[in-house]
Length: 150
Image 1 (cartoon, helix red, strand yellow):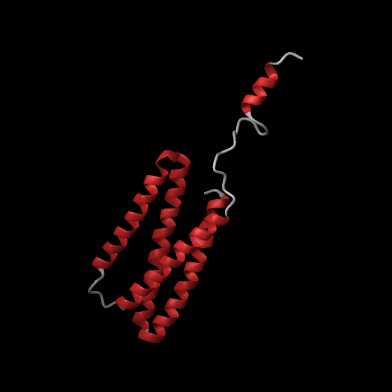
Image 2: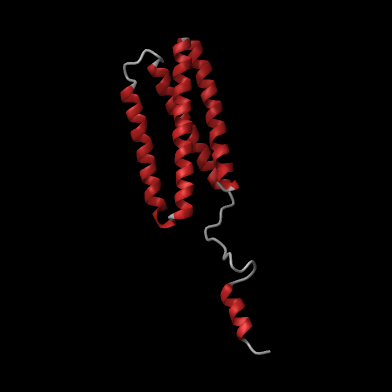
């Protein structure tokens, strides 16, 4: 991953982890151990799914750029589907408190999306990749100057 992408990942994951920590404290205070476990599971699920999605999207942007937008939409749909599958599998669990889990999941998701949007807006990302063959100037200009007689 290029350093710009790692920076976006860190700037998204750290605030989400902080919000997850606050959710764990609130969940433990309100519902005890089950509340704390529910908050941890919710925050970790968001960090893992969103982090993996960001990594995959960055790989797609580098290798198959013409499919980036479609894959971005597909990635978000897949993440939502995986969260629904997780909720369906653990709907009757007694391991964690479901309301604390849901609120932690919601708060962590909103935090991740806001932090990722902020990090992406602040990143100095080229819209067009510079020509790697010529370090300075345009390739057409170099060709034109080399063909001119002196």
